[in-house]
Image (spheres, rainbow, N blue to C red):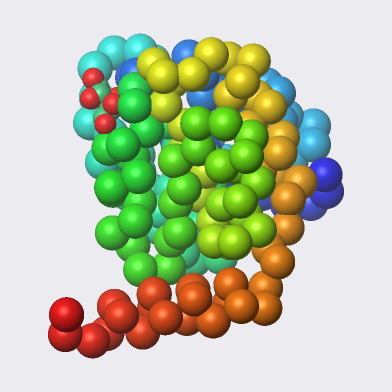
Length: 150
Ligand code: RB5
């Protein structure tokens, strides 16, 4: 893992505790931009999902988003056309989301998976690179579809 890379991380209250664990896990290895939330007090996941998505879309770094299920954060982040946010429940999904989909945001559901698994998913996701080739063409098809009338 490179020390120079930046991770932009955000959560709602449902993901707050896991976010803090992940921040501590990655500190020292990456620059961490923690956009909040700052407590387990109830808040709105789109606020933090949009913040991380915007920074990732601007090329500031890779993103990690956490909410209770991971679903709200996925829906939110993927509204940004430069984002490829992947909700991963296991290491296989994490690996494939990078190799095949070149995901630039990892999404986790803190109420769905345990902390140990979540940290393993983060590690696999961060160290896996995009395969390119036929997968690049497919990502271009996604971008093209965005500009066409369905
Ligand atoms: C918050 O209760 C919960 O709805 C949120 O964390 C997330 O799971 C939404 O998709």
